Image 1 (tube, each protein chain N blue to C red):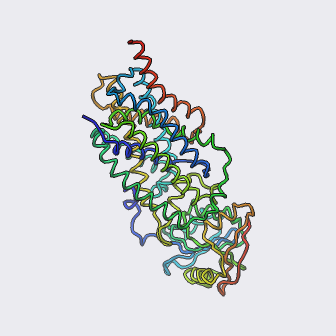
Image 2: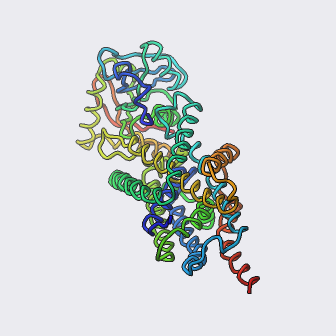
Image 3: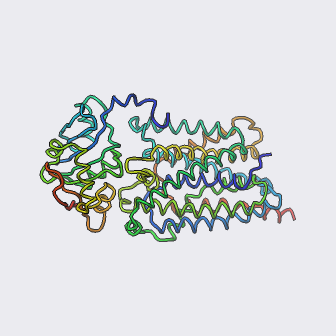
Length: 333
Length: 164
């Protein structure tokens, strides 16, 4: 049985969220931290009904084929967006290969995709177990960056990074960057016990971590936000534990590991769903889904606008699953 | 492979930049290795200057450990932005202004001495905090200016106001 603990579930999902923060583009402010925090708690409200359904011993299968199809589309699109984010952030992060231009970025993105195939092929349980180690490693790195940033930061940067968009827009941005909700809906079904607690723990941790990471980014890059494309990546690159020591390489490892896990989670969720929807496909399900995701990533290409339309699509795709369960239940009754 | 150790060869095949000075269209490079010495090239941008210097030296220049940038007659914001994002200099890289010519300063004094001079002036409260991030924050701020140490061939000679 592919059952995972709530701790493993939280690790899997949080890695995805932190990776998205790494790839965050544009200006950020304290309002962004508040917006993402509030957005995470609102996402909890969307996922809780599904957690209640799972708690009764039901599965995604009980919500109907249409629900599974929506979840599959959601994971595929989000996987594509993750590839797109990886490609864009690679411009700044893949330092050793920058001399090779697009070929270097393509090489690293390709290697990451291959590692995703390998890591997903071992099953959700193995993926979840190893994700705990990756999340712990990431937590240590994050702690180093935050501590260094707090020590060396200028509190005036919080004011320097002015908010220009308002709380609502930041909440919307948080939702638009939470396309992992479909994957969350699938993975939540694999949690062996305390499903509601797993959902609550995960979204509360997401709210806290998002707020801390974004505030750290503002503390470090607030003064130079105008010339910073990727504030969180820049914050990690600019935080120095010691005057002559840089932590770019540590961050590079964490970034790559998190990229692998983020995409692998979506690929595993999609693999499971395609197995349910199209049982005739017995082999290479994960590879097929990864190829589709990479293709979608190429289609999305450049920097997408993470605005209201995308936020609505992701929120509705997650909220509709319990609704479809209720409709199916009523029709049966 | 991802950390870039495989294809970048021996460390001796690179010149490690310690300090750079920009005087209008002339860029001066001072390296850690005495063998590489001090080199000046004419170029429109730091990136072009780096390419020209690499051709002159016959080896690749690594700019990630740059300790000091001396600005002369130039658009300070554009130059420092380029150095932070393209040269990827260390965030603790010091920024100073040359009293007359940055090229002269780097030719007369070693980069190590100049960095020490700035640190000592800072410890004594004579020079402001002038790492590249603080200076860029000041230039991008409301006032559009940042205080930096002023250097001459004799060493520290006061505080200059760098304008956007």
